[in-house]
Length: 173
Image (cartoon, rainbow, N blue to C red; front, side, top):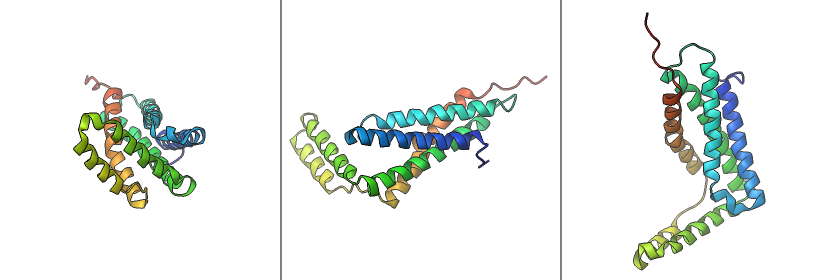
């Protein structure tokens, strides 16, 4: 199951490295891009390779149940997400710690832009809360991010892929 021969393992590694390289390129081009639509692109990379893993699984048997499709999709996500979280941890803690400051500044700026919708009191309260919030990405935060990511979007997306790609029940004859 954990062999590099396994398409889910191979695709998980490719997805994790692909997402990490993409984020690194964004950082090198313009660090603010790391916090834009980057998460949608990394998720798309994950989904593409999760689907590819299920297609490989389907090629191995005549009938692919929901469970048979769920396993390779989810394993691909688990491996990809682990690689990506480890990369992001190294990036923001050792390579580019200024990204954490930038993230906080961007969050504050977003709150300030929303002040018209929120009202002055709510905006001030939110800004105070934001200023006291810890944006560090240590081991504990990385672990929680990984664990939560396994549920959403990981398992949810894998279940949707499995539901779409499973085969209909074989005809009993």
